[in-house]
Length: 421
Ligand code: GDP
Ligand code: IMO
Ligand code: MG
Image (cartoon, rainbow, N blue to C red):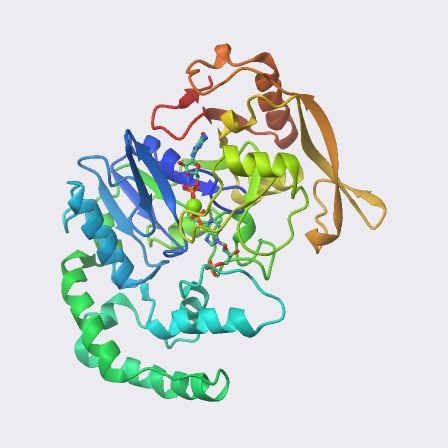
């Protein structure tokens, strides 16, 4: 069984925890897009691991983790992630971590452009400032530096020179700041290359041999951060939906058997952009505090709001989701009444589920109110034991989006998960 896992909202749905859980049954875990804008959390006992580039399956023994061609890699961050895991006695070696030679490298100038562009633009995106967007821009502009280029000093040299020739005047003339010296970047990145070389390979070739193994694809970000289908321009620069899995890994010779979408029981978003069900006060602050809604990458406070079934349904359609995993249900414990968005009003007209308005910032959410539950769900492990109001909440979601929920996560710990049959 080859399974793709994607986020159905604006990221941070709890994908890391779910990937860690599902990895037990899989041989190979693959990241296929994004970079270290992602922060995937796995909590094991007293320890908290936050993965930015390495797939969240690495904690399990005898698994192979793959960083696909669709990623943009900050080598310094990757090396530090490898070292941090090793210091915790987690095996990370060229035997269990493979990096695509076709992945792209985030350079210091990408990070600076990301920061400067954000600073001067009228409409800010609120990026993670990790250089993600500018690196993908260079990939498409065909001036990017790939892992394979970094591994060949003579190729790296002329590609870096070409880039600096173009970028340094931009820093000087447009942004009025200092550019980069060739030798500083060159020497530093060749050191990174030496460390990463044993991990780098042709993933297509490597995995074709292993085409009968079971694969788990780990999406980063979420559906509405997708470059094409998200709330553009408040999106990331990669294809976050399930369709991106094969393209971003090169594993077109395997069959995908199942697509799982992960959603929180409410909604969060980091950075700018429309968010129809956002709650700036009271319950929003409650979700923020109880759900510990701080970004795993930048530490920024996550905006919080109610569950939006209009968006969820669209995400199920866009990703061709077969099953949903619902996370953070425990955060809703103790609330008297919970509202859930079931439609939008747009320019004084109710809109149907399928005709999506061009600008989400102009919609008014229409809610259905459901009864809450008093009991704590955190220690419940059997579906039948959930409070009936919680089951009603789950059932309402399933019915509206037309897709079954198969697992419910009720806490950050590894075992805080309920299988719903
Ligand atoms: P990801 O980017 O989708 O992997 O999600 P993040 O790791 O950025 O954010 C999810 C946060 O919620 C992390 O701090 C997790 O430890 C935590 N978490 C995951 N599932 C649950 C859950 O069911 N309940 C609670 N209370 N916390 C959870
Ligand atoms: P995970 O994988 C939540 C958001 C940023 C910003 C926008 C663009 O942990 O779910 P970028 O740096 O990608 O150019 O920023 O996307 N963003 C995320 N939000 N979770 C993420 O990843 C995110 N990765 C990017 O906050 O709004
Ligand atoms: Mg995250």
